[in-house]
Image (cartoon, rainbow, N blue to C red; front, side, top):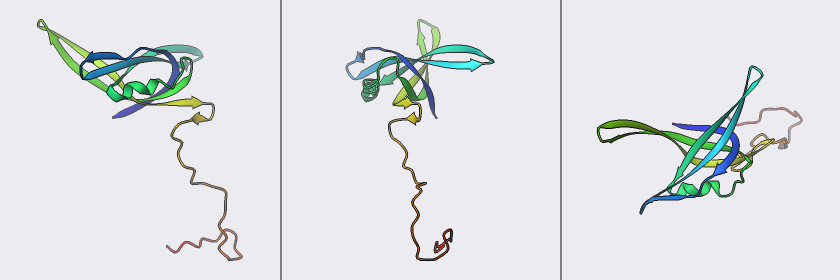
Length: 129
């Protein structure tokens, strides 16, 4: 299951080579919510792994971004003690401006151009089905 959240990019950390074949990069966004007139700020840390570590590169700290992510959880046991770890794995980021996201815009199929059908009726439904 995939999730998305919009917030301000606060910090980008360097890529960490965890093993010879595995690398991660963490970053934090600030999500502000107005709850009954009181602004609540949440700082949310994400990780990007492997080839996704570069998704943060083209964004600047302070920029508003939309992050697409998955929630991953693992069980970890050491010396008889069990611990659970939850990761927010980011897989895509978009820059957000006042009008909405600026990357990967959806095509606009609702154009205002009208196709002339040769009939005198301006709103006639000439579809063959």
